[in-house]
Image (spheres, rainbow, N blue to C red):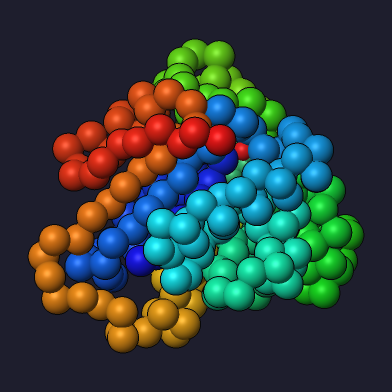
Length: 254
Ligand code: DGL
């Protein structure tokens, strides 16, 4: 069983990608939406929530865990790997691929406050880039907008336009989407940028890594695979995003 968690619906696109590769594998997904956004919380709070999620996923039978959240990965993955004896796959802003393919002198990164100030992220940044070549911006209110489904509202569209303008002013062409919630904004970003920018997210890399670690051994041939989604808050956002898909929606009680 594959366990996945995020602060909300951000990781659902990753869940879908996992299910395309492992259609007969049981998946369990946690949307910790009662406590979203993680990116504005204290480090210790995020760490504690992550520990609880890992305990819960193991209890449910997960043998591998995907942390479908840049914020949780950059804050907690090193500790979780020390504390728990199962493989973790994390997701972090794709600085290295962006620098590799970038044709301009600067790349852009949009992520949460917690991710951008984490030592994990800053260590990676220093390894592959220098301070002048990375232009960063916090996606203020972006997680909340994706959770509540207001991304087409006039005021939020204006907010997106200002973000694109910010990158344009810095002559950025490649922008790293450093938060899984922002994957749901990719089409909007592309439309507003009008072909001038490329938005990078690492779903493909994560799936490649999952295949390498998890392999084919766990694939059951039964067609009875189950997808269970646990929410710590209301389930509306999950129901909206996974409309038409088959899954069990359950309440997380911690
Ligand atoms: N999807 C999470 C991430 O990738 C959102 C973090 C948050 O809740 O602030 O960072």
